[in-house]
Image (cartoon, rainbow, N blue to C red):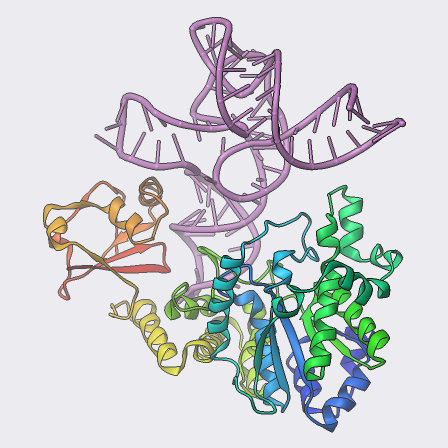
Length: 425
RNA sequence: GGGGGAAUGUCCCGAGCGGCAAAGGGGGCGGACUGUAAAUCCGCUGCGAAAGCUUCGUAGGUUCGAGUCCUACUUCCCCCA
């Protein structure tokens, strides 16, 4: 199991491994030489499993998505495995306590949402290197218990399972680990075996917490099929401050546009910490490495240019060039030229109500600038609320049509970054 | 089966003599400083315009008054069997 140090000196022959190493995807790998040789010889199939615990993927999964994208770009076949079956059990690997179980209907809806998130990144189809999406419920659901035990159970020893990190954690911390959760690793190993049999899948990617699960799958394939399979784990992406990436103000940074607008998505990348710019450019864009190096080397305020490029590139990948340019233009207008752009997030308000006057707090809360009216009030008292760029400390003040500017809208801002246009209709 | 302990502000951790909208952290948000960064410092962090209303696992009870005391229930942990 080569760790980072060994990987740093490894000279890959295949495009796949070269690109993944250069771009900083790989954390650990099993038999990197063997995998590199296989990938150099011809197309291989590789998969990543995704939980169906939410109706969209968020930025935290982007590392995995980009990994599959690069796999496809270097001439191999990506398999997106939806955990329709395993989600009913719940992956305990990086959890300190059990998570709630979801119903079939919720899981099915989540899979649909996630399917959309993948569309911009991979080419799906039936060709040799086209991506496919499969659902492990297809084989796990109808697996009988006795069959499960005979087929898979015989290959796993409790002795070994007890040494896994998450198992030890639960036991050491005296947190319950249910038998159901304990079985998760067998199910995931079964997935790898099943994909190996069905479509010759020989490689599994996963986050660093998946190492144990992946290795178990490789062992299972060796024992039952006498074939070699490989595993690669990717870095857990954290910000330079050590925070797990993808959580911000309003929670997770979702990929689906209806849950997180392209404008917000652009802003998310624009606000990257200085120290992360180079790493993120490598991971989440397709700019040449020489260009990445140049941008990452910018100092002081100049690095803001690199952040804009990062935001443009990342937004283009997900939402397309047009959406990215619109978001960039709106930001440029609002932050650099101090003028308004109709591309800023806009919230409509009843014209007749505005005629009569509406407390600012109500409008701010309804527009999503604050979670409640009380919060909007406190925001105003703290000097964080501005109406048409003028600080407004009295959140009870009535907003009327007189506050509309020449374009007939009211600019409402919470802090420096959250700007909303209020448009009477 | 027996015995002991735990559940607190719908983000997390966590104090809490019967007068508590409830200490303190973390996180988050806002302000200052900057570069829409980080670090640092300051403020805010249940709902409500207010009167007031609703919070401490659930349901009852004692009390002028209960997170705090009593009873039952639920869930979790530990020890014994």
